[in-house]
Image (cartoon, rainbow, N blue to C red; front, top):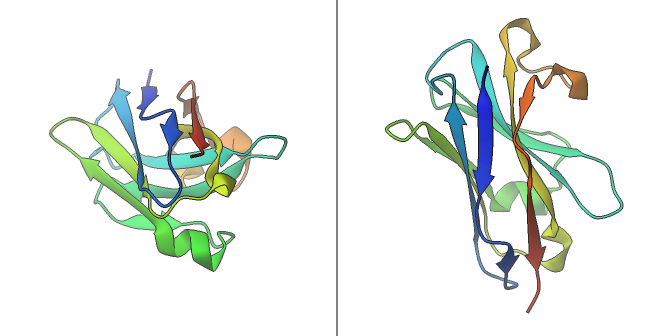
Length: 130
């Protein structure tokens, strides 16, 4: 059973860089069966897939991200800690959301349906405010 746990600051000031970490247990992030995703849900809105990182370190970002958001987003990993990270630079209040890490496995990797994400972290609330 893959388990994921998000961690990071609950409050970030505008224009700063948000950094969130997802710690994985039950599987190695270098296992080629899985991808490792970041998803967010702004208040009162639906889920938004941000992107994923693969076992190889390659990344893929959602084509639905606005150009502004895409240019500020980076997903990376630390294989020694079995963690992957989301960095979002120059945050604004519009980046306030519940942030989740999640994984897809096998044939479901790359699927755009929410049911294809087999394991989720519990989520972490991030508020961007001065």
